[in-house]
Amino acid sequence: MKKILALTSLIIVYSSVAAYSANPWRFIQRTGSQDIYLLEPSVQRSGSIVQFYWMYSGKKQIRSGTRREGYYNYMSSTSETEVDCVTKKYRPNAARFYEGEMATKLVPENSPRTRQWFDVEMSAGIKYLLPIVCR
Image 1 (tube, helix red, strand yellow):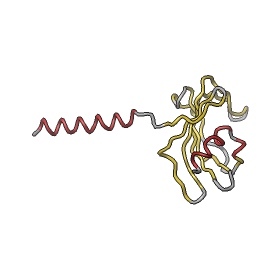
Image 2: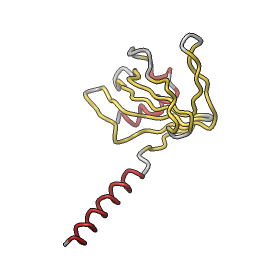
Image 3: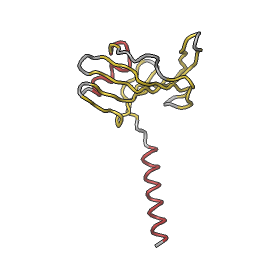
Image 4: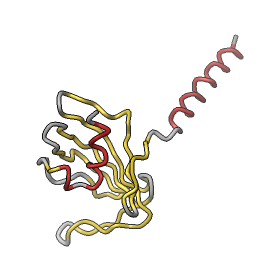
């Protein structure tokens, strides 16, 4: 009985690890030196508003920030974003920046400073994601 219980526990642990190790990010588009990914399980719709996580991942460091707040370099970023599928506007709710590709080595700087809505055309990444999340 102990052997069966131990074997069952091992199978459950292995299944959980295998599910976690699978890459949940779906490749969407390459834009210059940056790739755009969507975390499909995060897509949630409420009326015309869709909320989701997405990621830029590049091959070279990007400098960002301001002189006042300090500069930092990042190679990839993840963002929680809302899109209004009717008005074609978006707003970032939270963002994190990473030194490495595919969201590795978190940079202490994070989160956008505004909650205002922007035109989708202002974001190279969002315009590729809009047709997918607004289906």
